[in-house]
Image (cartoon, rainbow, N blue to C red; front, side, top):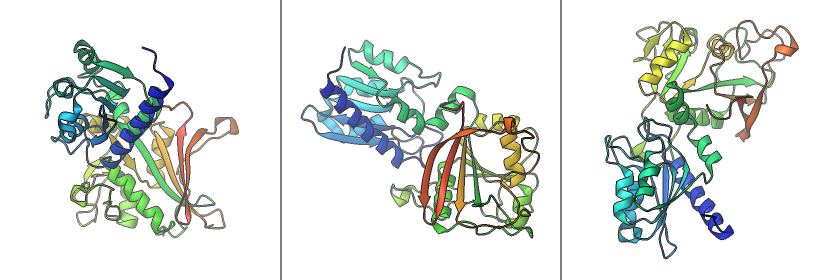
Length: 346
């Protein structure tokens, strides 16, 4: 049916609220997707819910529990298609039907083969009106790691580096801490908290001896739901006394490594370098997002280590060109986010 301008405006506003609810639980739901739901009662009251920790309620169930009898005759807004199968929890579509919801507005279809259109079909079979595609672009951006994982079997790869404004990541003597300020480091720990695994090269472990935890970031949900530290992966060998321990040591073809991590349910992999590892991922075309923290500082010469190590483009026609998808000031530094030209969603 054709939506009226008023209905369309309400739908977009309620889906925006569902997106905000999903953002609040970004760090605690993996390997499940971070989903938000809003119920708009017949009286116009808005009730929000979001996916809980694995094994706990999905967003739809959380919202229905808060709505109670007010769910009868309501419209539900959910960022991702409701599930129609039984996993660690029961099928959300059956709970929606039983609760008496009469209309469901969905951001995007779930590409997971266990769902993929089946949830929508079940709702329609039960006589519930379904609208699909509201705020679809924003939902796809928010769920990009989940969507790529379900479509390709590989994690979403984020390459994070910090550099001076003239492109240096380490001084000629090897020192590199700290290039950026405290605010950028907190934001970097947020990226760690959002990732299921974090990867660095063995040379970075030997040089910097990082812990690779999320100690500097507190998510916007209850402190009781603080995320666990991501799986720590070292390309190569790490000393038994290294702060990164316990960690997993991996080697070999990067594509095969991504396949293995994807099979284990890793939705997002954060690659933190060093320059050698960054260069390998970049030249292999395996990076989905580049996050560069740029400090207002110069090494002032040509002998500092750069963001990438190894051979680059020989000719200007071969230079990698992407697109900026975010530019933000973080404390005294800039946070630049880039995507490959062809990358919308995988």
